[in-house]
Image (tube, rainbow over all chains, first blue to last red; front, top):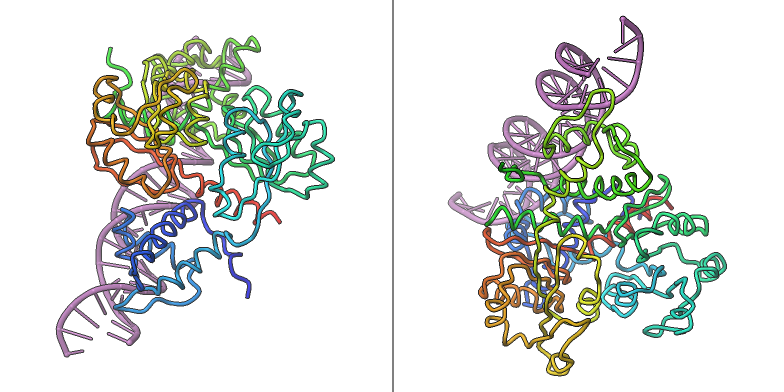
Length: 213
Length: 213
DNA sequence: TAGATTGTTAATCGATTAACAATC
DNA sequence: TAGATTGTTAATCGATTAACAATC
């Protein structure tokens, strides 16, 4: 069985997460079957988009007149979102945001384990650990990435050094970078990178607000 | 002069933030003129998309053969991103992420002032303040939103109560919600809402990674 | 059966990209 | 002038939406 090798578009992925949340909630309320029309209504989406999204990841067809068995549906989404595989990540830059993410347990629901933090300040490194996770000096990056066998890095350094640090991470063998810095980081094609551009988000929100006033 | 009343699409907005960052950087390096082709190369974008984006927000035309005067360009982007207007926001839910955002100073560059935090736990409220910003009980939300005259709320509560709290915020007169919770929050059309869905982002990144392996 | 839902195909919409005349 | 860049128009691409035959 070779599931999840299908190419799911980022937009579909994003929506699958929304479906997943909603389905868990509906299941908690005792729902056993969900139609795509119902799910669409709950998520404020067009039914066609839900049908199409589900068609990509469904392991078996839904039942006409009834919809989809909720447990089966949840399972299929879990599989395609890869929540079940354990993923390890490190945090680079243990400032306010870095600390918050080290403390945050919410990612574990999605199979992401933050296993260590790195910083360039001796004062921070000498804390030894935060939330039970060891803090290392960035000088030890090369050594530790290999040792910990980690492929994902969460970038929370100041924007000014983001590009430089990202390059260092790539050199150390990191394959995926989740960039929370204010800088737009550029990486080669064979590296997965995701820009969590907060400034852009804020700009969009405040533009929406301005349209309302 | 009635600028910025033009409808700029969210995608264009997002890119404008990227241009802005890059332009500030180039200016620091002594650049005086930038062509859209150069800017596109720097941001890894198609020149046409840059030209089109800029055409929406430019206050005067660029010069053939030379490009755009960098200061003028930066100014125009600043105007359309509305970085100059001061925006006040409150944080609802002073957990790890809420605390980090209260401490984070980066938003001030974009004109966003986080002026207070709210929580439902007496233990948290009794801290009095974090990073110099007062913490109030959510019971005082109605009163304080009016008093502080704030229109933007940053939602960092647990996902389970997100929808409920959002409704309370709207009832109190909040017009824009920046949702960092794990729940997808639904709001009426006359409210600006932005879902900062971390789980979805993580899912997309880990899918990208899987494609590489 | 009647009717709601399925999955899929076709139509629409919007965004990205390419092409090009106009400019200095 | 020659040539690089401009702004805009047309072509392409992909995603969303609507429509509908097939199903139980």
